[in-house]
Amino acid sequence: MSFKSLFSIIGAGHPLARPAQEKYFQFDTRHPNPDIFAVATRLQRGLRATFLGMAINMVLAGLKLAAGIIGRSHALVADAVESFADIFNSIIVWRGIVVADAPADEEHPYGHSKAEPLAAAFGAVMLLIAATWIIVKAAIQLPEPHESPRWFTLVVLTIVIVTKEILFRFVMHEGKATDNAAVRTDAWHHRADAITSIGAFIGISIALIGGPRYSWADDAAAIFAALIVGWNGWHLLKPAMNELMDTAPDPEIIGRIREIASSVEGVASVEKCFARKAGHLFFVEMHVEVDPQMTVLRSHEIAHDVKDKIRAQMPNVSDVLVHIEPLGIAARSRKTENDRTDTGKNPTTDGHR
Image (cartoon, rainbow, N blue to C red; front, side):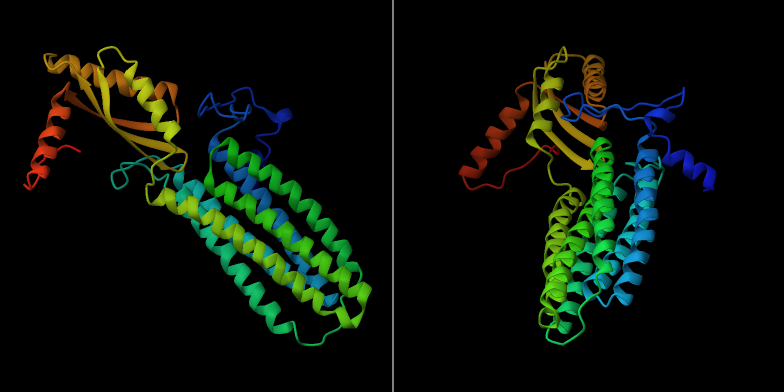
């Protein structure tokens, strides 16, 4: 990727830089965020946020490391290490976004959107590892006497805190607008960095005011901040793992899908409905009941109508697999299975879900 194309991606979302051929996409008109029509493509917005974070992290990490070494602050050095971990995480997020945007192929017929939660899970684990490293390092140095930090480290931390909070808000906005778990995790890395910097600021302030007797406050602040970072890592790991394990989505989403399918002419009822999330996309499987006397051709048309209507009203639904059931047959099958179970016989199935 050339620098020219990189800057075109970073600047694509600025309101003053909208090209005449803007591309829009929409996820759900009921989304609480009014900025649902994204300028530029989803891939470009994700890359813009990621590259911007990487560039700022490189500058801030180098600044904190130099200030921490020269200013004799263990908390600031630990904070710099956390920033370098952020850079590594952003690289993973970048690759995850690019891979997830690739179209389906013969080896991956469902697409590559699972790369997003995979990158999000990796980023969450990186937060946990960084938190553990900071705690262990600070705990070892806590009882050891050392010189108090220098005053200019507070100036550096003030710059870092303000910059990181602004960056967090921007990246989180992009992650929510594009429903990208990897970008949202990357945003929390910036917030975690701001939190560790606040902890370092408090600890250094206590050490400077209290003198050598309170030099331990520098390491204590690093431990406190690392605990918060670790909690954020665990908080972000759970939804990413749920998505990788195909956990059922919010019941409201299933209810909305059922509602749309039921409104299609010829659909008597929706017997079953399953959905799984991969990145920002949903894959749906459902059993729809129709008149048993209906022709195969007509039931086939209804199945297509159900699929088309769901995808039209919920653009983040990538595919819908519709299985046609004769009305009443499924209920009688379930009753027969229950009767066999009650009499101690092994229930049989007709091969359907």
